[in-house]
Image 1: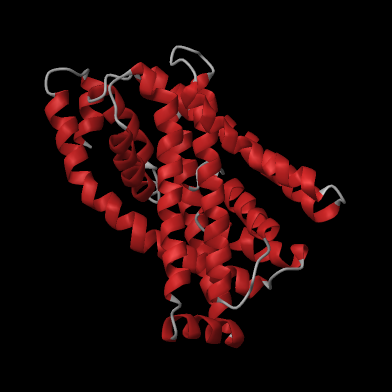
Image 2: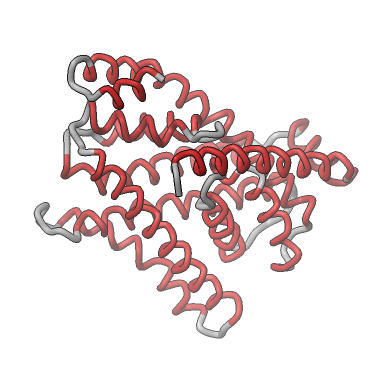
Length: 303
């Protein structure tokens, strides 16, 4: 696929995502009961649920940062918090059609952190594989809990990836240690999604069981992985909405409203963090890139 084709697909994906988001908002507006639920959330906010939702949103940021940090830290000079800043900034910018956040992160890692671009691109592929495998793993565990008598086995399967954190006790030179670390942090990300959904649905008067919250986390993670759609824009709303009746857990309109609250969490938590760190990131790229980059890289830094 050519670079021009990718740009066209990303532009189309952005338009489709915005259209789907608009359709989701329109569906909520047409549903009087759902509007009443949202008004109640605003008029009578539950401080504990808001705290849980905000903490889980930060957990998503920490989990994603930890996964990419684990995959690239051995190949350059980068700290955990620095990766967190890059992930926050790229999460905001990836809402735009050309996903400049992804490009910017790769450029920063090469120019500032001395991580070869090929290594950064490979880490993105590795992260995609880890994301797909962990979503499938959690989906299997949830299916065992929901639809079989082996609930205890399903719960054990769901808990196993947490033990990948024991990789930090292993020698640093082991090749597969970084993959175990990445799986651990990805699981933190997925568990944070489950907590987010439990919290936002509770705001709307729907109490989710752990397996239902985990199901929603799987759906959201799968939607976020769709290429050419920044952060699953629009698709995530409808995926969560339409999954409710299939899971016999929430209505479509309530699912759309829950995901709209999730988008607001991104706006309130992630977006301010992302915007606050962007000037420093841009400055570091400019300072480190002077006289050290090819003309092609210079054009990317200046854009």
